[in-house]
Image (cartoon, rainbow, N blue to C red; front, side, top):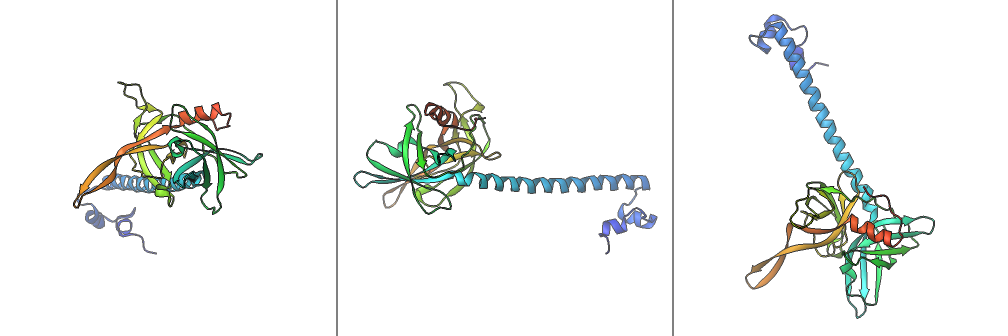
Length: 274
């Protein structure tokens, strides 16, 4: 098989005439140095390409890892009202066949008689949920499902500004959606600038039904928080009609720190947060 032109015409045994064609004015020593540099450049490009392929594989693995831990929640309230939200499996016990799920507390407020169910990805059956506890100072509720063992996520309490994240949720109570973003704000005391700590805000846009959806570290798949709320901008139209558009960068979270506190107070086992 013929070698590529540059190597066949300018190889190790390049005659002087052909050397002048490949590199006019070059001596043999200069040409040898150029060939060495070219070889290093080619190897660098190949290595870069391999690294890119590896990161894509890692991304795919992370998403596939966290998908089974993301659930859709529905509640039927007294009086006929219906709601939908998202949730994340934070603990499970194969012996007692129980799974614990967290979601946004406001999904179930105000308290009333209601039936809550979850649907897990790949399953058509619904599983009943019971409220275990709600945080008094954060928008998070812990629920338990009996008779089902779902894979639980690991929690991560500390995030950094600019960290890449994945958001998994069921907007509008429909299909599971994956959205990418970055950590855009860290929780801090008034007047302080924090670059590292519990995540407070991300720039990914979400919508109704995404409350309680998981926000995951894009590199590790660890849970850094759940969706609490999002800000919208109102747009007027003619004829008069108000359209609310989610504002990027204004999606707030309940951090994993608050989730860990609620789990500990409820004696629910959890993977050690990082």
